[in-house]
Image (cartoon, rainbow, N blue to C red; front, side, top):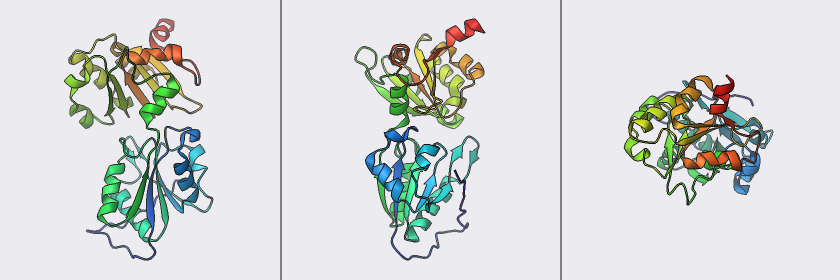
Length: 277
């Protein structure tokens, strides 16, 4: 992928020349497998004149962009943001005001921890036409490809989607509510916070033997699933060589991956790995 960053000039406001009327498509690219794109998403990607791409969008999906399409990298990796969110918002407006078909390409779903809501608000404020194309959100995609049903009548009566990308977000969570039994927790962007997640849940009463699963590179050839217990989570974080992107699933349903996995290598069991080590 050509990582091309266009910098919007700093200033107190937006001063872009208006000409033809463009449009911005906020497109969910799903967890990685291009076969999981919706038909509408695939069509908009193939029609794009310029694409503003996130870090988690894989080469297989980027390969659907037309050869003439300008690619602008706007990824956010830990401690490395190619463009701040405020600059991305301005960039989308500027590109649309050039009269272009702009695809804002995001991993997962744009409205589930994808900052799509912030971008849509900004576009609406400046009178820019936009369209939101849902994607398979990472929790659904990662869990399904790992063999984990997020809900199950015998194990889970609720599903909670939680962002855990930084210490500040973890500190503001309602841990007492999250620690309740018979619910599934799906933590997005939680690789750096596995130990803190463990501590928060245990401190508020979640059973230390609660099954957990970490799904790395979901739906891609290098997918890896690690099964452990909540008590072992910090040890997994320290010695498991977990890589982003990864999704953490907490709850009894996580254990079902041992029997229901169907894609890629079988899950690795942390207890067995520790005995070998």
